[in-house]
Image 1: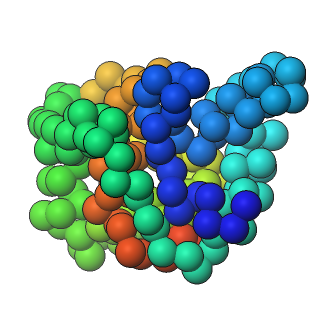
Image 2 (image 1 turned 90 degrees about the horizontal axis):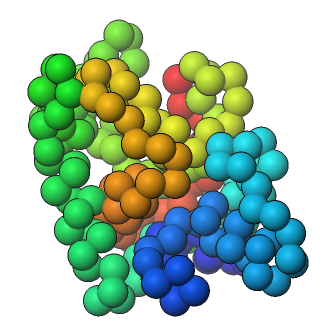
Length: 175
């Protein structure tokens, strides 16, 4: 499993779409183990994702150069720069324009997804990047997507491509 987490999201021929690590774990459960998929954001699925991801700790992100991922990567980039919600903010407004500053006492990071799944003090448990993205959308008073939505996978794909070469640091801890 060493290095696996550094290559996701990747293109799934079984789904004919990009898939994140949690989606791949569930796909493997369904097709190889003939087991039902675990609910997204469940403790069991997050534990498996963290276990697989820790095998990649310290390994640089090597997002695959797969042309089938490009439409989703472009979608993720467009979503990253899209102003939305009642506050009319984009991801870039905080994570590019104000990285290193503070919001409610917490440092605003550059938005690199190198530590997910991670433990957030705010949550008092481990959570996924989709949960964090959902929290950001709610924070700007935008309508969040459902867990597993293609928009979250597209955003993760774009963020991982921005972080290419950075080391996986799962499981990380954040405020």
